[in-house]
Amino acid sequence: MSEDEARKLAEDRRERRAAKDFAAADELRDRIRELGYEVVDTAEGFELTPVSERRLRPEEVESVLEQHPMYEFSVHWIVQGWSEDVARGIEGFRRHGSDTGVQHVIVDAAGSDTEWPGDVEVIALDRDPGWAIARNAGLKRTAGEIVIVIDGSIEPAGDILTPIRETLSDPEVGICGPFGIVTDDLRDFRDTEGPDCDAVEGYLMAFRREILRRAGFFDEKFRFYRTADIEFSFRVKDQGLRAVVVPLPLERHEHRMWANTPEEERARLSKRNFYRFLERWRGRTDLTVSGGGSGR
Image (cartoon, rainbow, N blue to C red; front, side, top):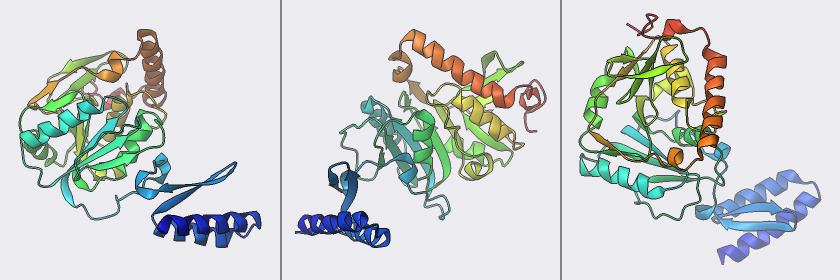
């Protein structure tokens, strides 16, 4: 019955729009939503979609960042394919620690039909908008005090939450993770065991929620993932904070996006992203460890 009623209201809304009575049309749209449907205008008229099934545009994702934190940790995943990798990662968290105080947020940008556990928050996007935009859509839903941005190639092999908690308890540390890199010239980066580093790689990076207010979100020009982590790390360090390597018990599996992107395309996208990084941070060797920018 509610669908019939929603359809009738949608017909009335179409007539109000044709008459340019947009205030009345907006009111009817809200009444349709209350019935559990979203009305989508089309060239032929309209379509009704159950709210629970409708995929969102990234800008439609509602932020909870102004609300008081409800969890200690928010763990953020992105599905651009290979949803089984994310399922494996979440299971790793649950196998090696309590889920109490942990929020898992999945951004599904691949249109997958995976059935996720009921306690996982899933943000189903209407398309794949690129790595950074999808990541930022998920970050808007952060209800935890500590944010963990993680790739599906990572599987916890022990308690990773306690070392992250302890590391970020130091107010001088802005971002941490198990994979750190350093550079002397902002062009050639190499792995480091730390403790201080110039950037934390995006396979797993953790920071306090308030960092999003101070440093901002990922640069949404980064449609491919590479170098977005370096650029974000530099924005955190530009706040006078340290980037720190923290050893974590985990297993690394194949990075599917890298492995399934043709070599020439990988090179092209990586080069373009690196130039984006240099456009903003060229000459800022003062932020590097070798340049004295450890944050200490």
